[in-house]
Image (cartoon, rainbow, N blue to C red; front, side, top):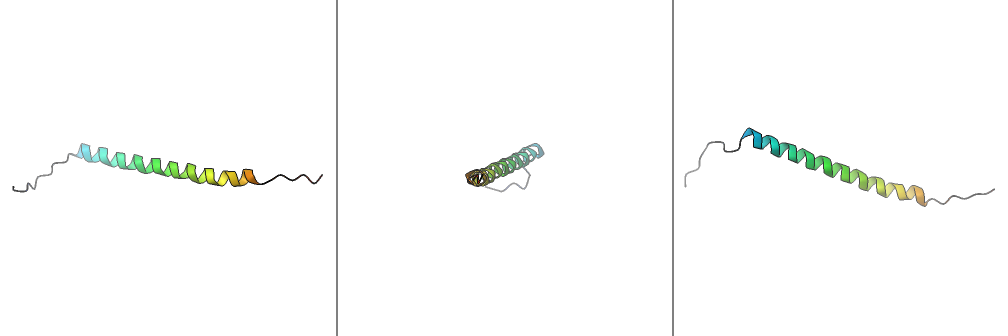
Length: 53
């Protein structure tokens, strides 16, 4: 089989793939942010409120 030097992927497909990759990165970043926020929040809530009054 001879290799064909012609570009087979269209610009539209490349654009779709790029957008998909960016969407996945954004989704993962949001997921990581929620995870980080949920691990920080219980520390604040877990602090006991002591009334010395």
